Amino acid sequence: MAMYIVMGRMVRGRTIVDAGQLRALVYAAAEPEDGLEHVYAETDLEGAGAVLFLCATSAERAEATAVRIVDRLLAQDELRGWEWEGRRGEA
Image (cartoon, rainbow, N blue to C red; front, side):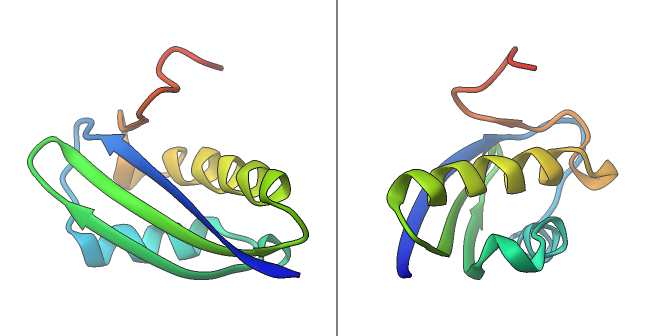
């Protein structure tokens, strides 16, 4: 396994969270088998940037895992209305 970095941006919804809260929410959304090692987050008035450090067997698997984590993350009440940039309108 190797360490992969997956970066993305979230557009703020109806709630406001700071970087520390967002990191905690990402960790809470991850499951042990996801291989999440570290999260970096930075918030601003429009949303947040996030960097997930994942242990995976390939870049493709790391990307797929990041999508699953983000789907669980955005389902949390604390991020009501937030969206992962570039995925708006997708089910």
